[in-house]
Length: 231
Image 1 (cartoon, rainbow, N blue to C red):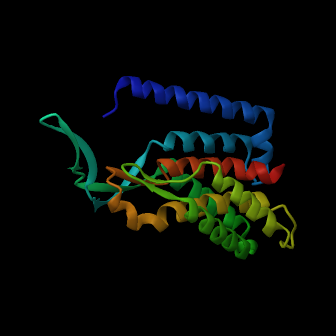
Image 2 (image 1 turned 90 degrees about the vertical axis):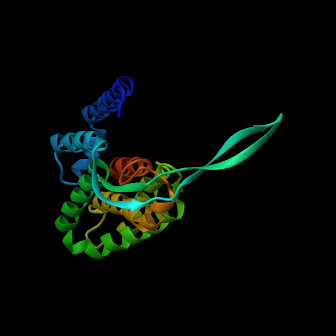
């Protein structure tokens, strides 16, 4: 259940972020970067808009048995205080897919892969490398899900793509697409899919693929990785 003040805070957050993105689009920074992906400024704005709005949409897939979380309770026994661990029951965790943090980035990534199909080997290599590094820093957070540092995936994706771009026969033109695809899919695979076996021990009511802490990594990767390779 959402209370009105919380909803208003979310709305304010979205409008502030969208306003900032619209400003960046106007000054041409994001437009210039995503132009190298073959996307028009209007398409970029819609992509960012639906990614943000879709971040609040989780599509349920299945229920996973969840372990109980242990909490400490202070017990007063004739003036002596003791910390007693108590269990907080979490009957099940709903495994879901986040629309804005998983489905949209994956769809854009597939579009870019088919558009640059001749470079599929480089896409695969970049995805594997980014997946490895992201998986090393992804951490399960009790009661929340799998979280990653927000800026780590886009920086790694940009560096990996720039390095592989040196070996691409067609030059560096495909590097922005390489960065977007490896960053988004590498984050989703390395952070979420490779940690599905840890969901039952998190005690979270909902574990969302591409959501919670991972959304920052995927969403920022889609923007920053392309910008970093375009500087």
